[in-house]
Amino acid sequence: MHSLVFIKQVPDAAQVRVDYNTGTLIREGVPAIINPYDTHAIEAAVQMKDKFGGIVSVLSMGPPMAEDALRKALSMGADKAYLLCDKVFAGSDTWATSYALWAGAQKIVQENGPVDIFWAGKQAIDGDTAQTGPGLATRLDIPLVTCAIKIVELNLEKSYIVVQRLIEGGFETLQVSIPCMITVEKELNTLRFSPLPDLIRAARSKIHLLNSSNVDIDPTKCGLKYSPTKVKRVFVPSKRERGEILDVNENNIASVLFEKLEPVLRKMNKL
Ligand code: FAD
Image 1: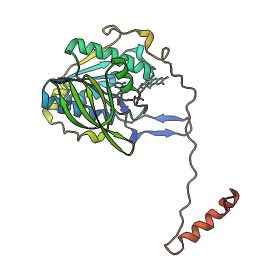
Image 2: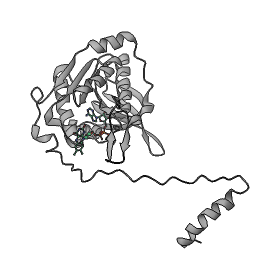
Image 3: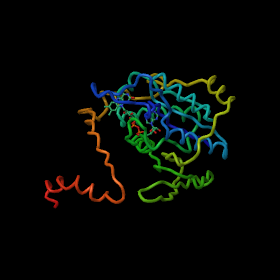
Image 4: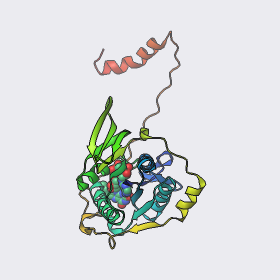
């Protein structure tokens, strides 16, 4: 079987801080990582390969440094890594990003054969829109399962997969035909530890470069100029006032709270 995993390189959110004077992110010294949800998509695809055979391709659109993310994916068990990198993609919104990734996927299909399952993370921890996976499924015209937490069954002969997905207040189990697109939650699996030989193989592997000259892509459908989303304003929420820490015990908690809240509630005509 052939899996294709879309992975995005993102700044490690745990280490990003905001410069309140300029309203910009402080990126200096912040390491770039694979979007955490995408690592679970890679793991899921590699587990499928372990069980059913075949290959796992990974595709990322981004600057040359996204090669590091692709090498990490190779060390996790992916077989072929593709980097879609070209000035024409700069400033693409989610609509244009899903178009460029779709075009890159067509090239990978030409080289490695049809894809059974397309995988993506539920969302990227920087952009956070969760639109790219659904956008790709629409362009590929295949069923979509979002927020997957368990692969219940894959039947390649009958071309279907059964997936459990997270919904508000519980989960639901869906059966969809393949090829399909699955976006994943972190609960889907536990990441494997990459042994040294896999790290060496990943370091030595070729990263296949894709761009507007070797992919059949319409440059008037990507990049900032052709992105329908226009960013009107970017701002940093104002800093919150520090709260007050009250010295209370179980005997006086109600009276201390009432004393604090009474003037506020009276002002609001709630007393
Ligand atoms: P989500 O939709 O939340 O991601 C879901 C999943 O889709 C990911 O887990 C991953 O599996 C897959 N995925 C998402 N992005 C990629 C990718 N690039 N490669 C492979 N898989 C992916 N971003 C820039 O980096 N540079 C820019 O210059 C830039 N300009 C922008 C201009 C505008 C007007 C707008 C609106 C956005 C711009 N962005 C830019 C952000 C960029 O559009 C988004 O990062 C991108 O579309 C993905 O959206 P997201 O981050 O919300 O990912």
